[in-house]
Length: 382
Image 1: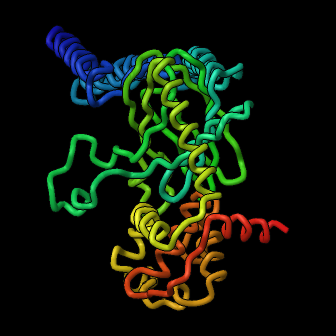
Image 2: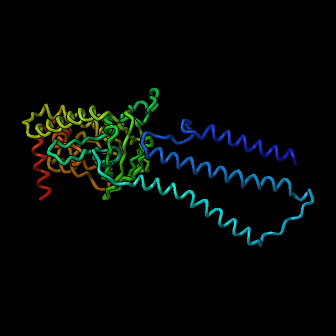
């Protein structure tokens, strides 16, 4: 009997030691505490529920193991007859109920904190696309509107295992979301195509991006730095290529960055009214094509047989120019061809159409000016 008790206590001690060793936030097996009050509340709730479950497991399995060893048939022990005991039935009903209530109280408190609404210093609209994020900074003033796309920046050679992978493999982006420290940031999250989920564990934010619905969340980060996440919804073939990076800066640095982006937006508006040459549009269009189109239609314009059509010599790139513009703006239903009308500026739309009509030997010699795109969009809206 004494040996059995010693064995049980030793087993419980080893179990607690193992769990406590691998249960703290620094372990790669556990959640991290994060850098916001919400993320820390979620972590504390997680650890509370974890230890409650550990305690229940030790008690239940301890009693089971003890009963099997000490009351086994070979020892001549007769089974107890208490299965109709009213007291036992009350205990195994009331005790679990009390435990659930005890866990529900802090869980409800954390949920209320997550869904708390209040005034925010910065409001950002986040739109999910296959497979990139668009960030739009909402402003009530007449400042130039800041909006840009954040796409995967991991080199294709790493994905194809041709070179060694970096530390942040598949967690690198072309341009991160930038927010200030110690300011409440409201996040309005939606999607333009399928369901995505904007998830950054260190910030304690995980919110679905659903077409036609705007979900709201918020964050207030106390420490400057880079925080990484990714889409947490199975959104399609390249779901794993949709990372998120949040660059948290001191308020003064954030305002400097925002002013620079507003200046870029004003310059882009000026470019729309500029008189472009064919060479200028082709040069710019090649860069736009390399960022948004090359994955499907390939750098040589030959596409992927059976999956993505070639543009070299195609009826689209060498045919009616208005039909070409319509496809770029609106996409093609039932195919992987996306609608880029809301993703790209009028300048970039004009440039990429012009490039496709004059690259790979297409040599159409015609061009689309940014103002032509403006007129085309106006015609669609009439």
